[in-house]
Length: 208
Image (tube, one colour):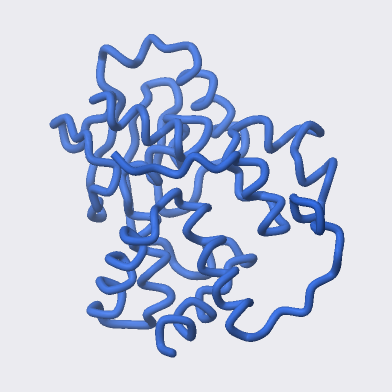
């Protein structure tokens, strides 16, 4: 199975902001962005003047890395966003947030998206009472998500759920950190998603 093996902290430094790829470490002083806020590599501290294409490409890479999808997967998601009604950029983010691994992460069933994806892969998540081990599975409003009985005893998972509860859950999901279950209430509105993402640049990139 193809997956990205790039060091996670280097990915954050390359994009110049926190992508929250390392779980709780991202909320501490040990975060790479807190210590070295410039790009990795020999020439990382040099200021670069990017073209419009460079800015568009960089934004696409940032979104792709944030949600942990490969290039081929991202193109498929974008194609689906184009087919749907409404703004393509907003559709793109809604589709990425509707993925099972992303919702599991938002509910605290993993300290990071990669950890939540691993739990899904290992049959640790149920959707509407049935085990689903496909991270890219798209949820619909009203779907119920819960941690399977065998995975509920993992201390790391419980700690991640408690940490997520202390930070607060997004408006579009409902989660119970103690029972390790929740509900995907609705597709997120653009105003509820990170303002640091500029999805219009991705639309411009693929419209070239």
